[in-house]
Length: 79
Image 1 (cartoon, rainbow, N blue to C red):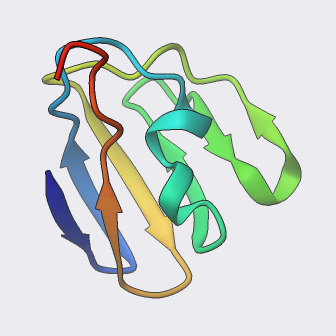
Image 2 (image 1 turned 60 degrees about the vertical axis):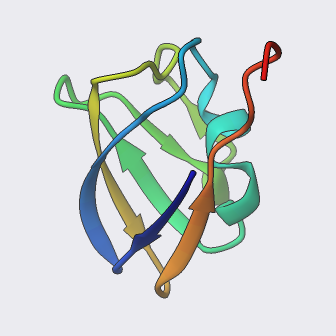
């Protein structure tokens, strides 16, 4: 799935299985400032910090980026 992100946006995650934040945001890590959930937990790759629990379908995340980018979700193993 391809999804375009402006510099700040809330987004839903669509894969069937949980993904750890570094895996879920792997292709945009160099552009990602922070991704956080509604509980205040976050992933900040520039600080090598992640306390987000596994990301899963139907949960929203606020994503702040340096520039617009396209997130390509990892494929589930059974796809």
